[in-house]
Image 1 (tube, rainbow, N blue to C red):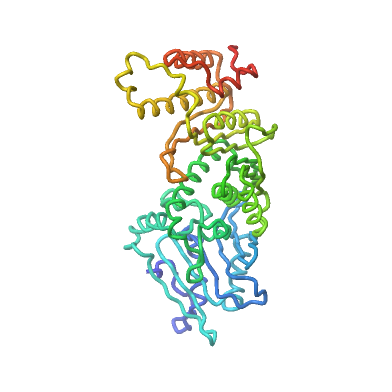
Image 2: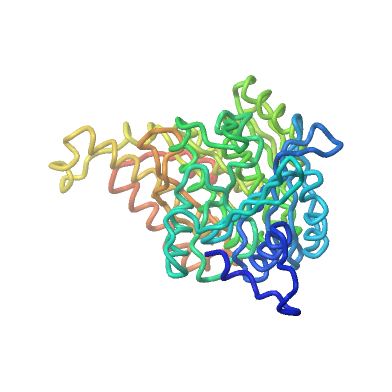
Length: 439
């Protein structure tokens, strides 16, 4: 039970036991001290500001110090304020039973709910999270929670023995504007039809977060300039901005989209929730002027639009380039089938798959030539499609040596010769600039 987190009361044996409110606060402090805290939600607001709906509190780290992040949800906006740990706890103490009449505390394996009756009497319910069985079951419970579509991820420090939670929280209010969540019994909950997409968004953020750390952009307070080309409705654009901000970084995130209605939707939601450093604009990556960036994202850009996006990322000096290619049309008509592969590639589906593999392998080689560590990986498709391949590139501290550069150029030429290829868009763009000449 939750009693494992409650130290014995000190003092005389005859002293009155603490009331439910005091016990709840003790549970909260102990959970924070033992790094078992996940989230605190305060609702049933009865304070002076009638526009406030709820308050969500998370454990974060700012400039190397732990803090409590307060997300105040109003009817028309959201306000985030961060407080030092002791100051935040004191504020929660003031709010309980005054401005808020109900509180729900989640830890790794337990949960506690405090509510106040009409007469102001505090009532406390404690217990284990569903699916846990003793301390040994805590990791299993956390893993189960990470796949629960309504589970919210903590934003604070984590230990090595802690099961990985979701990277994002359904409590973030902008998800409602995007049609991902709705209100259910006083809480934000996923729209059932969006459960699969929610999983996909979180998978992308998992990959994105690892790239940010590898690129050395994760120090608290670091400015991160990011452009998301073909941002669509903005699911990932909002998610990346939210994740960067939750890490204590200073994001400047821009969604670029051809559809004006999607641009308007994104800007309206960003303004409604006062999300500074997030904007959307109408545009095409192929017509984009130079723009300094740290991260360039382009998902499902059709055919050579992916090459133009990668080229833009290179021109911008991006330390991270993330592309999910689509519609590999350029290479397939050029391919001549090598004799040894004719029995395999006589089937159209195999030829198409081979064209995709060759195209993305060439792109990865070219990015490595430009000084990036590159991977071609599979990730969960954001739209329900088999186009779930990603080319991920993170800038290395040093460019390839002349010997390695010569080796990569030889591999590039050999692949083109083997398949009889005449041109590849990214290669052409780089050769025009003279960036593929041998040293």
